[in-house]
Image 1: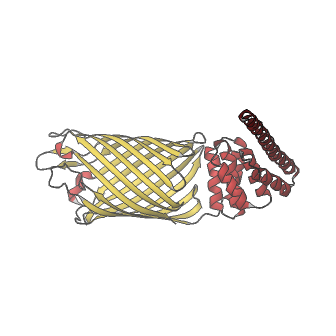
Image 2: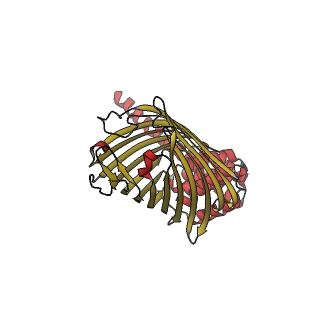
Image 3: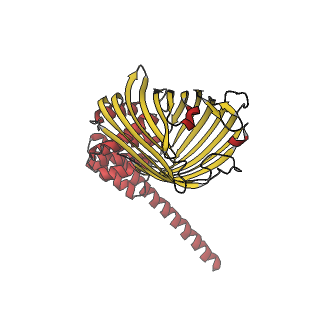
Length: 427
């Protein structure tokens, strides 16, 4: 009797399994059939019918990249832009679909009359895309989206921070003072003629740093300048002529005339080469700092790589000086260092809101030998930053910076840490 019950149980199990497989097969066949009918309707231009069949297939459990793309495209064709955007955003997470998703998100932004968002999507395709056809289409869209440029562009940055060695001196020095500070930077740019990539602009900028308990290191700088941007062969070039005046510790400090020339060449979609030359004529406005008077030149070569989720900068800079002589109670030396700097910056884009930045620089400074001192410095600077972008014009930044300076002159051996947080806004 028990054997008979066991036999029936086995038979029933087998029958149920067969029925389940048959039922599942029917569902799968039905989903694939609806998908195929949707593709046929899509190709025939019956977009409303295509949407219906693609939705049927989805409701029956189909969830493939191909279905998501066809459903998104069909939604776009029938004017259901929010639904289309939802699926193109989903496709944007898939590497092989990223270019086409970004392109269509740009088209949807145009439908929503959001030109700035559209430009961001098309620019992403141009800078990081792999599909040559979509790159050309995106370039055409960008050309058609070029707006009448604002004549004014401005930026404001406010920081609060803490510096554990504001005078950058040895730890056993009586001048080794820690203090909190406030920092302000504001600039404005007026387009005088042409466009910003080929025209003339006038500039003004203000920078100030003020410490809470001591004012001997407070610094303020005001600058006025003229800028010329133009295309030379396959280089985008910018030349700045700038005059700045600064105060230090509440007293007159320096007046600097600066010429800054920058050239950028697009080597590939992701790779850019920058060349920069800067020359400064430095005039002392305070006899205490006359040793800093003279000229300074800097030459830099920089490589930048823009990937989908990160940005890499690396550069080498040579600095030459022809300055005065620093005389102290015990010795003197010529203040005309030759500096060699290597710096790398890595930016990881976690998402559209959060960016993480690592910054590492190494600098060697060789000062001209005098009768009493032969000074050479080696400086390591390390910084980490986190940025939260509220939108493309407004962000919050937190930054930690550590500096270690080694020198053959004891009083210039120091280390320091700076922590600061702040907000910046573009107008």
